[in-house]
Length: 174
Image 1 (cartoon, helix red, strand yellow):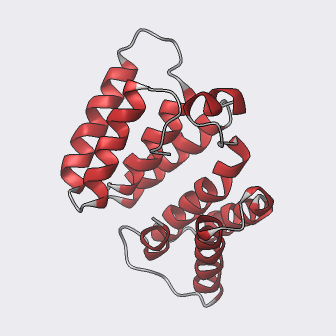
Image 2: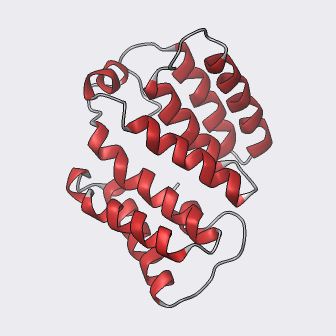
């Protein structure tokens, strides 16, 4: 979501944080994301822009060290997607379709539940992710998300409990 058709200062700031996260500076990214979140909360709007919330919460979850906090941010992102429209997403980038967000969002929620040892919740969200595969392109990103869902499903099927903390599935699909 970093490439923009229309300039948006909030999305640009989120992209700066994500660049730090990708470069390995999770703490620096988290500081930027916290400042953006505080600005959104203090903006005076009853409901912040769902595109900003989806994007920020999605990336904020990635930089958490506590699996419960990761889940909280993942759920926030998923809830915001429910109020996001294609029209708003396409103001940011003309290729975006909200339905295409759900496989990754549900995968992240599933991975967080799995990290917390909540297998039934993880399976539920993996099923939801798989139900929305039709909205993924047949490209590298689509293959990555489908593969991550299948790897996490196989891990759950093998009844292997992963380490506490950030799940390997989430790390593999970033």
